[in-house]
Image (cartoon, rainbow, N blue to C red; front, side):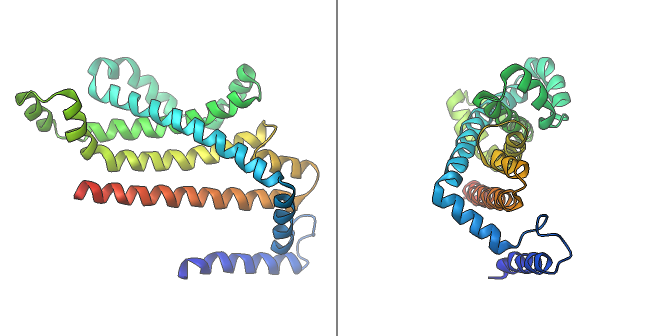
Length: 244
């Protein structure tokens, strides 16, 4: 119940600010009007279409980026040769904001589906790869030595040592990557897209429909919150599983 106090207070302040006359109605519409706009968009099916397009891009891009990040992070953590070849470039590119790749990707891929999926892949890849790298490097080297003495097979080494030791950190990296990918996707749709929540907000801006823009903000925030809470629940379960 206490967690609802902040959203309710925010809605109250929003309503008061919108009816106070301090801001023009074209700039700040009341939450009741935003709610009516959301209902209207849902009635026509437009809202569901934009949400479905955004979630499809997120799911596909995140799955590819997360798998690639896990494989890459594990490779540079376990192989000195791979680390020497790829780690310097990886850590340099990691410092570049993902949104900075948008102009280059638009030039090469246009604004079709490939562009949105690739930008999500990049947003998910780097946090997951870094989490996998740090998690594997934090495993005591003595564990690997014991496994070598007992001639532990590679599948057993992975499932009995690496997975239990690295799972909580990797799941945390996945959670960070998921929320980051969602934010980057909405930004990419705002800049160059023909559908999706970001594109719905951009079209509202072009038509001076602030209610549509704010409806998109609300929807993207609710979805982002739900994604983060779901990932946090999985993170807690992974930590309990390791402790058990």
